[in-house]
Length: 326
Image (tube, rainbow, N blue to C red; front, top):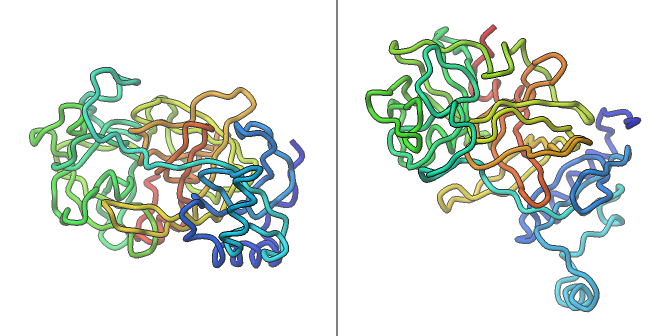
């Protein structure tokens, strides 16, 4: 694929801002971002044209669309109003935490006790009913303490979760319990519109900078259109994809509370296809496949079509005041 200049022009940014203003809180809109035009319903055919993309949960056609247009003219996605080329993909995105123990799960090797720990394995807090993915190792800017970086909905998961709460490895959905305490909740970035959090390591087990079955993380970089990426997740193991959307915003509900998540990165299947994510992969890190630099924190996805959503890693690190451990 021959990609366009992947820098965001002022015109594209203005178009994105207008689309967000007009459509972000429409109940049928699942995500708004800047990305490559999608030409097929399964998201596997991408064209090198950057568009403002307004993702919808359901596309209406024929008489149903005409009736909707007459009843809700302000909700019609009009390129003239947005002022930039527009694409309207169809997908409904869900958080990727596994909430209940599973009788049969993928990647069972990631469900056990690890010492040292590494990215891509099972984790949860002390009150969760399921599990997510241990993302990786970071260092606190101020104290130098070693920390685990994952999603808010993996490490906290409830609005009444408190700093200092125990974090288990493996997670409770993988039979983790108090004897498996490896860290304690420290802080999160929900106030900065990011589904991200850190937990400070206890002195029970060590945490390496490796991603399970991938190797060491080498640093951090910004996600760009067309970048080939790879992740190590608790549920699906090693998966790959291509970044086809950046700078997204999405309205997501966390325990009934509405939050707007910013800096969303959209990940599509490569030409080879294959699964990108499943429930339980939340918290895993997407890496540049060539350099193993971290580019995104996985938090959501869609199964039909197969997509993944991450949060760009640089703003996550800035909001939490941490650095990736090298």
